[in-house]
Length: 166
Image 1 (cartoon, one colour):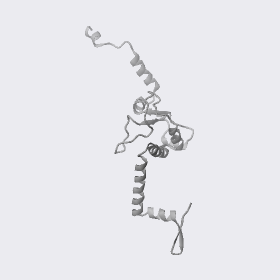
Image 2 (tube, one colour; image 1 turned 60 degrees about the vertical axis):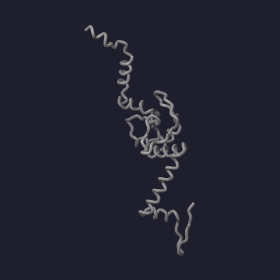
Image 3 (cartoon, one colour; image 1 turned 60 degrees about the horizontal axis):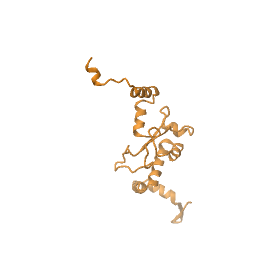
Image 4 (cartoon, one colour; image 1 turned 120 degrees about the horizontal axis):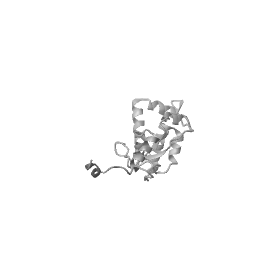
């Protein structure tokens, strides 16, 4: 709905007037102050934090990934760690708390731009930070991860006392 305002016999559309005001230094400062206050109020509730996080994911990854994110469980797909909520309260500096937040795990052959431009590809799943770091350090190399498992399962690991007699 457009609101018409009559000024000195001329009709102006209110939205256009507001847009011109926002292009001035004073208007831009007022608009930014209002936006910051709006976001801060949203972050006070769970649904508001989800709305803010959804918007950030949508701007970075695209709408299809943001819709996918909304439907994910609050659980790591590898270790099954449960999370309290999708968008927990962050510290004052807006730094993530990796004990409370999940991350989006994706195949690194695709960039975030690929996800944004192609609705047919989606991330692999939601992970806790620890599991995501493990995959990142191993560079998604299945053979390396299998070798790690074999190493941990190896029953032939020597103890210190076995080396004393050598």
